[in-house]
Structure formats: C-alpha cells, structure tokens
Length: 101
Image (cartoon, rainbow, N blue to C red; front, side):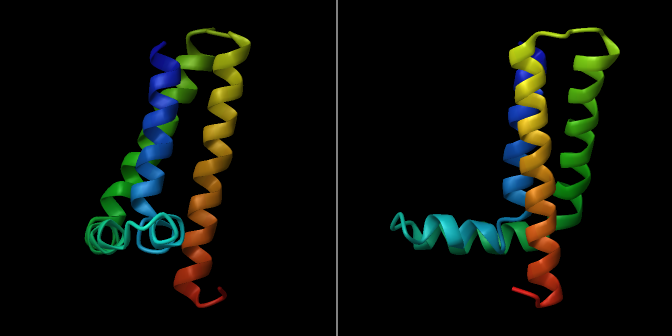
C-alpha cells in the first residue's frame, strides 16, 4: 500500500512542478481558470523544490518496490506508469521553458 501511495504522491508532485505550463492546459477547459493562475504562480516560485521532491518520491517508490522485493504486479505497473508521467511532465516543462512549444 505504501508503494502505491508514494507513486501517486510522485505524480501529484510532478503535476505541481509543471503547473506553470501543464496546469492551465488542463484546468482552463474545465472552467478553473482562477485555480490555474494560482497554480502557475505557485509552481514557478517553488519549481526547483518541487522538482527535487518529485525525484525524491520517485526514488523512495523504486526502493519500496524493488529494494524491499515487493513485486506485486499492480504495484509495479503503478510505479512505471507514474515514472512515465513524471518524465513526461519534466519533458513538457523543459520544452515549454526552452520555447519549443
């Protein structure tokens, strides 16, 4: 159970980290433009801290799954899905900051 929880916290942290670019893309069509703006301001201010926390949570997740030999299939799938989502958020943020989007 802890393994899945850390994987989900990792995805949430990555979403907050990339909230400056990814948040408005998702939240504005849902009618949450005020929340999107707040999230963008917050995420830019604490972006480095959130990036480090995301990588830390991802490392803890990998340790809980592979270091402690917890090889439940659903936990491994959740871990790899969260890893792909985190890497996708990092890539999106890098592309947005470099002006390629």
